Amino acid sequence: MAKEKTHINVVIIGHVDSGKSTTTGHLVYKCGGVDPRKIEKFEKTAAQMGKSSFKYAWVLDKLKAERERGITIDISLLKFSTQRFTITIIDAPGHRDFIKNMITGTSQADVALLVVSAAKGEFEAGVSRSGQTREHALLAYTLGVKQTIVCVNKMDLTEPPYCQKRYDEVVRGVGAFLKKIGYDAAAVPFVPISGWTGENMVTPTQKMPWFQGWKVKRSTGHSSGRTLLEVLDSIQPPVRTTNKPLRLPLQDVYKIRGIGTVPVGKIETGVLKPGMTLVFSPARLTAEVKSIEMHHQALQTALPGHNVGFNIKNVSVKNLRRGDVAGNSQQDPPTAVESFIAQVIVLNHPGKIKTGYSPVLDCHTTHVSCRFHELKEKLDRRSGQKVQDLPPILVSGDAATIKLVPKKPLCVESFFTYPPLGRFSARDLKQTVAVGVIKSIEKVSLSPQKSEASK
Ligand SMILES: Nc1nc2c(ncn2[C@@H]2O[C@H](COP(=O)(O)OP(=O)(O)OP(=O)(O)O)[C@@H](O)[C@H]2O)c(=O)[nH]1
Image 1 (cartoon, rainbow, N blue to C red):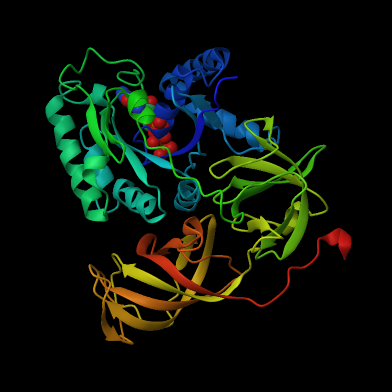
Image 2 (cartoon, protein in one colour):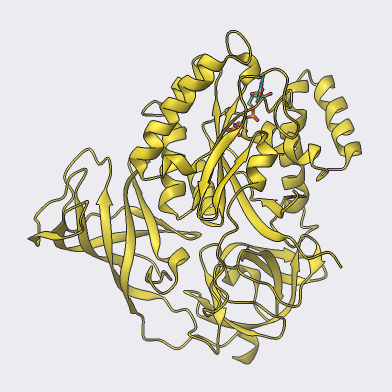
């Protein structure tokens, strides 16, 4: 039996219309992740509607519609295999509520594929102050997505087509702000492609002889790739924490005909098995796991990194929601927090931040408004050393230790104990105003409610 390939979650991010859906749909199609008959059907329908350029983008949307009809219990929409990995493309968020969905999807990812258009004016729009290219890269970094690959897309639309000068210009622009955010620019590969024509996606292109591949620095030495597929295959397998207690932030909860309540999400730490009794926090519910599925296959042991759907007994779908965290009732079960202490960096807030400020915090899959209860100390941004006790205000660029109090029930963890549940970004005025790492939590001292049946 062939050794099972490592499982990797990839989230596709980038400015509106940069080509995320087209590139994703075309890549999965070329890697055999989509039934060719489906593409033919999409091609015919798209042509009839005069939208033939949308045929690959529809792959994503149609499969999403399938899922929403409740005919599958896992969220992993698109799966395909490369030489080394089984890759799940995490739900590419639609237009509505984009940032929230993008953050939730990103918080589940091991790798971010940042799609940047090289077409005239489109790159510039994406990196402008109102553009999403920069904000998405910042959110991916903050939410702990360790590896990023930049697809320089729409190379067929540069002037002249497949122009090296334009590619170099985009690489310089994006590399500069990735470095500013904190990425090790030498470890971020760039790949010129056309998501529409398929150039340089899975086979080397003749149209860009000037591109001989990208050497990336890895802890295991250097690896390189020329096509998008080769670069995806060169990523560093993520370190999975199986030796910690279970933490599974819910991405969504479905009611599946003939099965019952099915929460879905990515296992961040620990393992999930049928028969386990779970605690859900802050819902304060307990329930037994009946079955687990990933990519339509039943699992007896689900591991960190796995995007799973699992069926639970005696809990109604309306009592659980995105942002609840599942854990093992026998091993450090998750609980809600009264408050938590975090190290926060203020990014681009137009005014002055004082005690009482209450932005929305995005942490793992949850979005909850939290009050800046006490500005405990101002820190030197580089060294982290204290420079002032109880600063009266904070402005852009300041770093501080802050006590935060959630305005609604919230389950988060210290970064040291459970890293994926211990980092957050704060949003206000429709932009990311701060990022933070949780140093300690004060737990709510309540025992979890029994499941409905045992009441
Ligand atoms: N010529 C050309 N057009 C492309 C390419 N990639 C995408 N497009 C077109 O650009 C438009 C937007 O593509 P999408 O894939 O929907 O972009 P997106 O980033 O998913 O868009 P949103 O989900 O709305 O943010 C469509 O008309 C695509 O056909 C490309 O490589 N070359």
